Every structure is written in C-alpha cells, then in structure tokens.
Length: 176
Image (cartoon, rainbow, N blue to C red):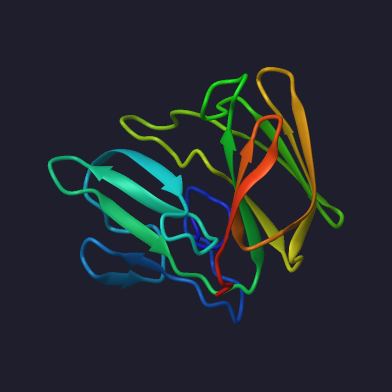
C-alpha cells in the first residue's frame, strides 16, 4: 500500500520529488515506507478521517488499541467527497452508484456497507480530481431508480446530496 496512491500488496517507491508519509498516531511515529511493522489485526477501515482529501486507514489490532494511519501526502491535487442521503432509497444511500467526470477522467464508485471483518469503511464516496479544481458532472443513480445529476461542483469539499433534491450541504476544506 502507498500513501497518495493505489493499494498494493507490497511497498512501492514514491514518485521523485513527492512528499508523502503515514503518521501512526497511536504511537506518535512517522513512517515513510510500507509495509509497516504492525501488530496482529483482524480488520481495517478506509476513509478520510481528517478531511484533508487523502484516504487514511484504521487497523483493528488484536488485544490492543486500534491503529490509525493518517496519510500526510502533499500532492497538490484536488478531490471531492459525496455523502448520500436517501429518501425513497435507504437513508445512507447504500447501493447508490456514483459517476464523477472531470475533464477526460471518468470514475465510478458505489456506496458500500461492510468491507472487512469487524470494520466499516467511510460511507462517503471519495473521488480524486487531480489538477482539476471541480467535477464537471456527478451522476448519482439511487437504489430506487432515481437519477440525480450535478454540474460544475467545486472540489476540495464534502457535499451532502439528498435523493431527488441535489446538494443540501457543502463544506469546503482548504487544499494542502
């Protein structure tokens, strides 16, 4: 796994000139290379715990306190997180399929529940926008069959989207 990149089963070198590190908050350690020396664990959860636009990890250690690995990358890239609020569909929007288009990049993700043993990933859907400062279009297909489309949504923020209404709340976070 690599902070600021895609997950993998082995350590990957960071791009030249990048500034990325994991901070192991429970022990006050700053780690620059993975894999990490971690205790035996039975699950992990992924989400942007500090709302800075990169994905952090909580590991459920056996007979020990949970480990929070906070990703402290400084890429200069932008992002958007979407919290779905179902009305006809379930309240959390679990099962909603989201498509984010920004420039020539299209990404698709779903709101999912459960992911690892005794763990729950963040229900907010996270899309990286790269150097783009906004998402050109976000399309949400709800479990009920309803489709909501949002245009020109500014990045570096969390938006809450209610089924059938669109954006009901937007909280911006300063870029790193």
